[in-house]
Length: 170
Image (tube, rainbow, N blue to C red; front, side):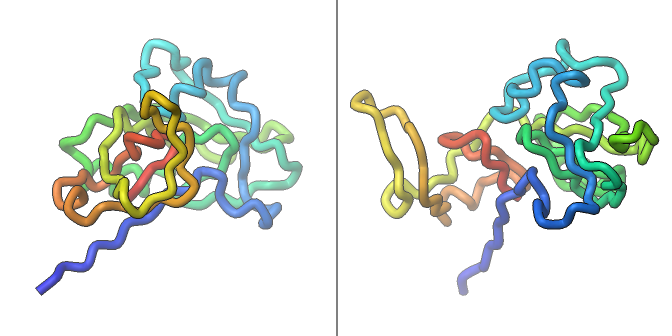
């Protein structure tokens, strides 16, 4: 009997067509070294004590379990964080509480967190994925990602794809 495994890429941008949803575009005023959140490097020493993410959309005040943004960081509600902390208790993940503000300056929530899954896990099926490599074998880009079922047997619940650390898999 085969066990079916479902995995999903967590898309940090959210629904770009719903203009009512909170969406941040320029977090660098609040979070220095935010680009390190794209690749799973530690950012603890660079984080402000109380980061604030501001929506760039006027009137965008609808909040969901995952807040969308263009920087690649995972921003989640307290409920989503609690689920992730429970299922991923043994994993190395940095958590930073943050506040979400509207473009008009209104506090929408102070109960969200920026998540940074550290490192990466090799779950890529090199045979069936479409990978562009440099002459020295380094991965330049991956246009089609196929996960390897054998490698997934030891995969954590939440991980960055080692060969493409901007991709977070759940």
